[in-house]
Image (cartoon, rainbow, N blue to C red):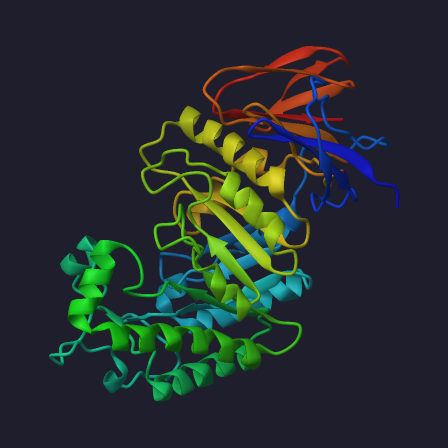
Length: 432
């Protein structure tokens, strides 16, 4: 296959990479100074496609009903038509695991190539769990050195009437029981594997977290707990077997849990979820370079990037953050190995408020993303995306006649050679 030359400017150094056209796994060829501007990225020649169409190959969703009921017929149709991967939320159907089994069976009948995962909390037991007769032994709850049960320490948990208790992952009897529960789920429905939530080690990083667990357990028990977490995930990987996957949440955002960001757990699993891609917990844009590097770092793993927006955002802010964060994901998207979600919660309400720009029909990437100053761009089979995470407007010159789209509508059809402005903290989408 012929290789296309891609120029990437990083910290003032020009690196020339050979791209295989498969989405950004180029190899360094050398470096030299240059004043040649980077032209807009290549767009595959050929027949134009529709501006909007379902993009199931790059979309996933973590979702559940918060009504205690099953998904409606319309919700089932929306899931099947728009998403390639469904990760159930813990509360789906009133915490009733049989509702997850029923939903998985129906979704797979509607769309056999979909991947559907049941929810399993790595560290916590929820009092509301209805696991079809599977009852946890209270002796398996985590206890501190004084014998007190350890609960999840968050403000809303302290005020809650229902418990959220840590299980003792160092206990092999608990892990054996948990694996038996998972096996019963895999036997009950056509799941693609197991989705683990809350797979973050305890007491290993951050002064507050280290001090809390040092007092509760001591360093030896902290290590045993974290070793037990890794063992549970590794044993689950053996349980699901070839052709199915173990996916864990989560990839630590902005390295709050150390430089490894929990990625060492990918050594014993098939994929991971990042719930703070592009925006941090306060709704502020954070550096995306680390996550873009991550998307190309694990070509044999499944990576799920989710942007959580805040209820306090205005409609205009939410739409802009969608364009920015989806565009940022698309810069590093590896078809078949990564997917994206933009959401404000995990309920089925997401299905009725699905942003139209999630379905921009760009096709597959034609090469790696490229950078010029603060501007990022990438060509696709049916268009091009420009992302400007900087604080000043950026100009680009279109290399072909393209239609600019936004919010599910056509903005304008622009001729080749036209100069367009990409606003700061925003992204622009063009389709053929």
